[in-house]
Image 1: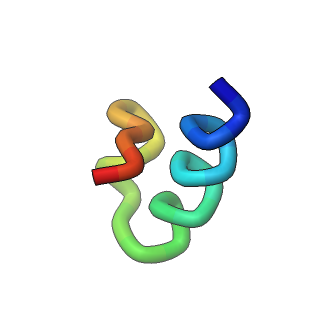
Image 2: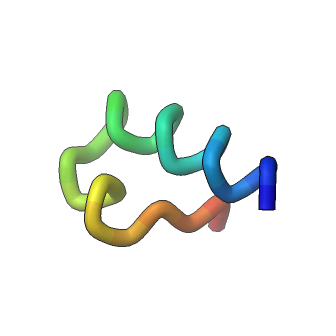
Image 3: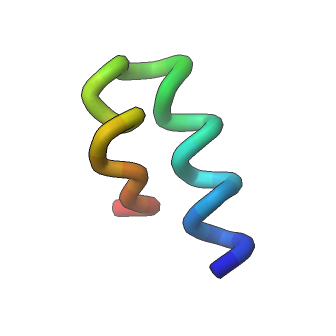
Length: 25
């Protein structure tokens, strides 16, 4: 579950859509 949180925070910087869908892929 930690990986999901990290990926979600990192993804938000690349795309705002990740905020609603925090996925590592």
